[in-house]
Length: 181
Image 1: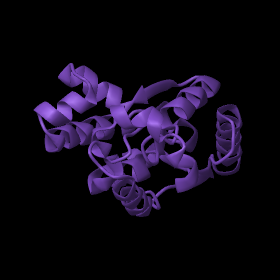
Image 2: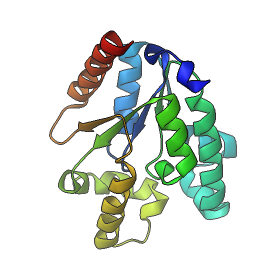
Image 3: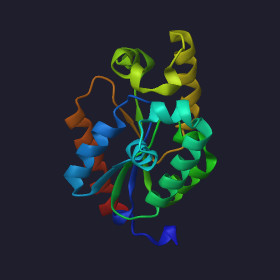
Image 4: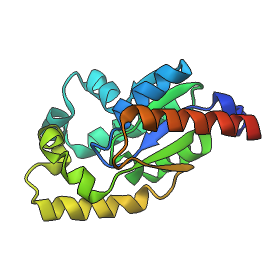
């Protein structure tokens, strides 16, 4: 069924490490393509009626991951969406398979050096980073890079403006739609 969705109507999924800009870039791409934007973490927060950090603390990571998987699979089967998935979502094989078969998956790649500059802005809102040393966070960063290697397109975001990145993604999608649609 999913393979029958025309390329131009497939939903777009953004993957990458936490804090790389999936939500910010995703919102802009959605606006430029006149599509709805879905942030999976926000959807999970609505379901549980609490922030992600509280879900992790009170209900646990496994309940969070199950809900994450259910919502992502449901959203990926819809057309014309722009979806930002959490940094750990692709750890789940079912999530990877669904995203890659139903959608166009963009990996937003940011170097460790550039990512480190953002840590103070994001650390408090990311339960996976709580209580970890910078060395442990770096290890997690590189470990997760392997799971992000399954994608349709990789976009290097170091030293680029959000607008530039979004324009590049939109232009590459339009070219792909023209060539393969």
